[in-house]
Amino acid sequence: MSLVLSVFEQGLIYAIMALGLYITYKILDFPDMTVDGSFPLGAAITAMLITKGWNPFLTLPISFAAGAVAGMLTGLIHVKLRVRDLLSGIIMMTALYTVNLRIAGKANLPIYNMENIFDNKLVNAIIPESLSQFKTVIVAFVITMIVKYILDWYLSTKSGFMLRAVGDNETIVTSLGVDKGWIKILGLALGDGFAALSGCMFAQQQRYFDVTMGTGTVVIGLASVIIGTTVFKKVTFLRVTSSVVIGSLIYKACVAVAIRMGMQSTDLKLITAILFLLILVVGTERKKKVKSTC
Amino acid sequence: MLELQHIHKFFNPGSVNEICLFDDFNLTVKDGEFVSVVGSNGSGKTSMLNIICGSIDIDHGQILIDGKDYAGKKDFVRSRQIGRVFQDPSKGTCPQMTILENMSIAENKGKPFNLTRGVNKAHIDYYREMLAHLNLGLEDKMHTPVGALSGGQRQAVALLMATMTPIDFLILDEHTAALDPKTAEIIMQLTDQVVREKKVTTIMVTHNLRYAVEYGSRLLMMHEGKVILDKTGEEKKNVDTEEIMKIFNQISVECGN
Image (cartoon, rainbow over all chains, first blue to last red; front, side, top):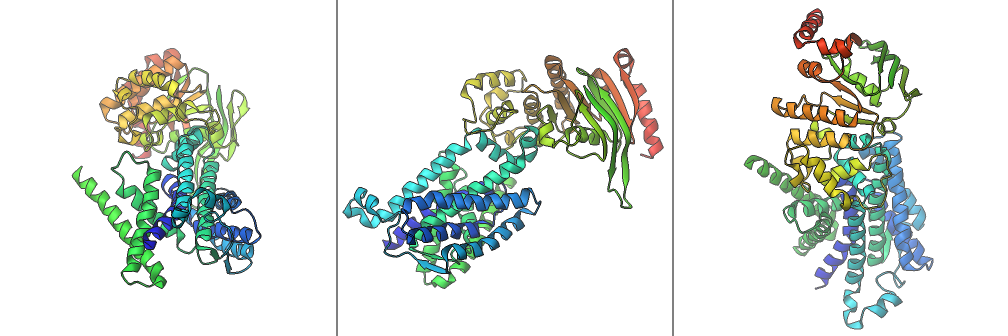
């Protein structure tokens, strides 16, 4: 039971980061490595603010804003300084490692026994005692759904249309008299804002910040996006954003099963890599089959 | 009025591959003209369009639109006055977005792309009417992603999108070249219809000499970065395809093509 709960808790929290990568990777077609730094950035800021006694709910918008600034910087490096997309992300990711250490003050900052978004007076008052073990899942679900619906709404606005257009066909964005560079910067800001928000929640669920907690985040996010978009390609009643959230849950479940089958938690990164490879191979094979039947 | 004055353009300057494409190139296009441009490969037709649209920078010279110099302006700034249809049908539309969404963004050109709804439901009937006008059955496919349409259908949508908002110039860059002859004919008639209706100043580059002769009010032939033939008005009406073909062959032979 606790295993299932932890899959849902972490799956929902990571889903927000995966939604961010959905924006950058799927919509913008930009491999954004910044996420490995912006995810722990959210965690570092959160741990620091909570130790200082801030209201835990304030950490959510602050982390999002900080992540958005990081994404914007990646965008500026790419668009204005004309650095290749992958490299701009790697530069920011590397820089953020130091920034995160500076913010937290040390490599590991625990926040046990402090109020957090999953455990505080307000949540305890709303959620009855009998459901107290589901508190984290419920709060994570509510926040993830809010984020998902905001993203759905944004993608149906004129600004959201431009974001979709720039990943689809840059030429048309220029033809419409819009600077495609700024649209990319905006998309990256959103993507990394989501990643930092996800990191913020993760730190509060784990009750600590660790400077290495961001390593491999991009891979986890991409795996979730690819699982979500390939598995549920044919399911038309599901929005892509919902598929990505479910993809994140499936991914976490796979990892949990692997650990259940006797793998050590130190093997986690290897499991992640192998799973990602599997997903990529299976995902592309599906495409080939579709082509040959045409 | 569009004036290209003393345009100089070098490719790969300073290297052994230095190519001088335009050396003091001049062209004036009056309001309401429909200019067809023909010429062999490498004659500078498409480069000329790219220079007008700002896709490539010039080394020297002026690009005047109604007397205002646009030479240093960014491509997306110039785009606000210009509608462009490309040779590649996929360049004028967003493949993953539906016809309706594509038309919505096209209609919003020149206005801010803000947080209001992307699709204005009140305009759907207007879009449907425009699509029905094409006679391609697209009015029933409003919610189909444009990527699922054929090249000709996409080009027709691209043409609609390029001319949806008031523009000063319509730039057609071999926009029928990637289509089969029958579809090309339909798109060409459609183009003529749009240009007449909107009375928009148009520059069309084409490899089809017949289209160049049949359509438009002015005919240009370019060769090695120069205009070698320029016929307007009555002169243009009396031109026939064979005559143009003869001149075209002559310059091609000179080049060894």
